[in-house]
Image 1: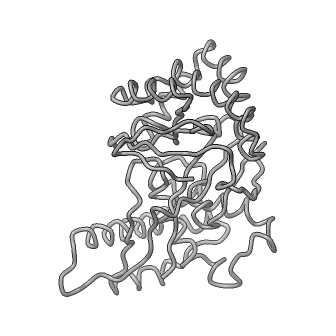
Image 2 (image 1 turned 60 degrees about the vertical axis):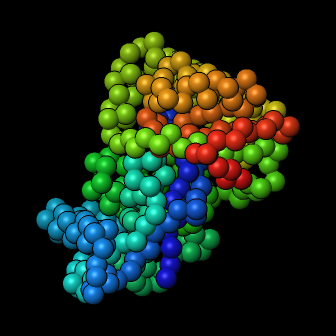
Image 3 (image 1 turned 135 degrees about the horizontal axis):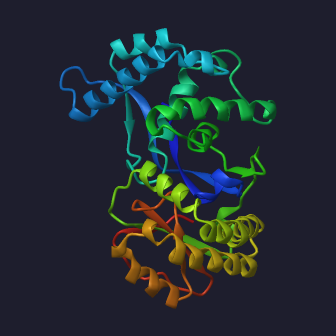
Length: 305
């Protein structure tokens, strides 16, 4: 039974669409895998998951998605498995910004694409294929989001950290447990669909003042934080992270739930900085805790590294 992990987009929310660096990592605390329905007493979850896969298969056939892919899915085999009770068992939270649809797309691609059905894929042996994989994931995930970067399923498929820089993809080696800080996830307890917030951000980018702030301040802060994070440079990382935190707090405040603002201010007074995870609006927030600082006890938060 192969599991496909959730993902955390550490840096690059919104900026990825406009040329900023994006760094995402697999997050195996949550994952999904294919299983067979218990025919004797199928649960509502199993039936709903199977029905969603059947809708996906119809969309794939009706829109001739295979012609748009480098390594199309074997729809005949997928439909045969669906008739035999296939469903996707997943504990990845929905509308939480951690890649629930990405895990499913990765599983479908791994099990049913022509790439996996033949020689398989090794990123070290065939790095030139990674952009083609991302193109296919953009196509597949469009079923769920209409528009996709392809990054979520790519991370789940490779089960590796992925860096997007200047439009190019690399697979950095990160030593997450050796960094001079800790990272926590804060659970806002709010589900939030991605599309409306992306639409809002694009509308903001049509305002020259915001557009200038984004390109002149936000992107450099994001890129600087990502680079320092990968180098384990604590001082420079928190310098850029504070810039990113301040810009998000002032100019992307619509993406931060009101119920979290007081807690975020409390954390900042302790030197702990919070930023969006993905599009925001709910789901999880990322909290970075420097050496010597103590994260306050809160039931709906947990340390990830």
